[in-house]
Amino acid sequence: MSLKEELEGRIPEKELDKLPNRFDVIGDIAIVSVPEGMGRYNADIALAIMNRMQSIKVVLNKVSKLDGDRRVADLEIIAGDRTETIHREFGFAYRIDLKQAFFNGRLSFERKRIASLVKTGEDVLVPFSGVGTFAIPASAAGARVVAVEMNSDACKVLVQNCRLNKVEGNIQIINADANCIPKMLKMEFDRAIIPTPYGMDHFLQSISSLVKTGGYVHFYTFKPKEQIPGLIDEYENMGFEVQFHRRCGNVAPGISRWVFDLKK
Picture 1 (cartoon, rainbow, N blue to C red):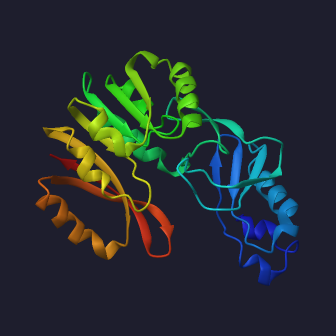
Picture 2: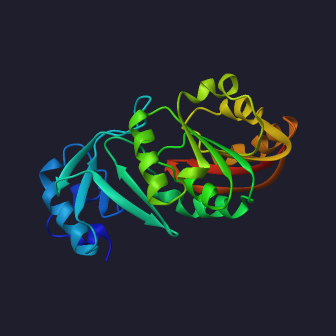
């Protein structure tokens, strides 16, 4: 039974049509986007979610989109009493306070896929590292990882998550703006994993300058499908071999997140 079916009879049909039928699950927390003006149904929506998934203990309403340098959304508690949880995927555990740091639960397959490509002994750069969801699996695969994150709260949690996953010896954490990376780091990397925020494609050029010839860049961007052939041509003209690309889910009408595996 879908969320909307669960709520039939409790919310008028014309209001129910406005409600998204999906929600994100991070640890034991569900995040839903309740449309403006439907706040009076928050308790019903939270109860319906918790009835569908017995593991859910907290329901948050995403009031605003990601905002500011810290890349965190405004979240309202509509069931439960906290915003912190431990999220587990593919053998790793991540402690996260969703009011303090960004976390995308929809990229779990990508995190596993990229980690499977990392080789023991590689030097790997991860800008926008957040709480460590790309950095920690790469480190566990045997890489020496440099993780760069601007949000100091996320960096503190990343330290905890390195200990939690027993990889603290293989990760160097830098609390800094990714724009500073080319001037700040004087080394070359075998691989860069760049989960780029929306509208920041310029980081491909600046960060890939630190990747060795023959090294790899895993670059995430947000584009409509019809732009992808032109983007592949653009990357090839920049000196990359596009080895693989795939869509990683929709983020807005007509706009999807895409990943490109690029060999320099």
